[in-house]
Length: 152
Figure 1 (cartoon, one colour):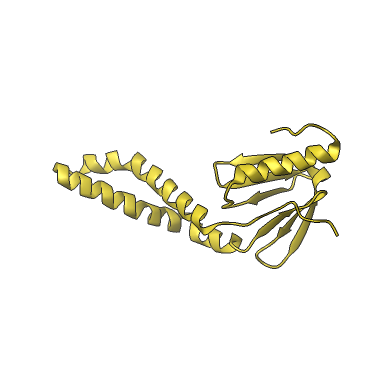
Figure 2 (tube, rainbow, N blue to C red):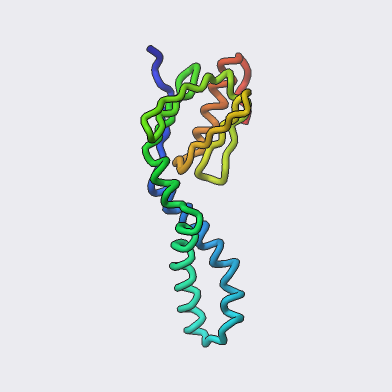
């Protein structure tokens, strides 16, 4: 039996940071529009901005079902072996992906790794702490299997 090289699991901390970061970006984009609708004093503007920064992530999360996405993916586990990447899905399903079938590994922002196969099938490992490390290790293992130098 082959020893695993690394294991990656979704992180609640990464999910929460992403959740509030996207909410904050949305708040930054929309707060000037809201402030032009109502004439506020400086203290009123500060309180309105604070309220926007607190409420927007909640609206964002429910509007785009982020909490449901977290619940679907929170039990996933990605295990890298010398010859394959194994996904233990939240539903108990196990999928083995031969490294030789992987055509592209990409980083999506700071929290997600995309994996594309020759067949066109795509996988995404979500809410991964140190996602760039996961990408680097998969690419290094693919290169080692081919006898090449690692590429990014």
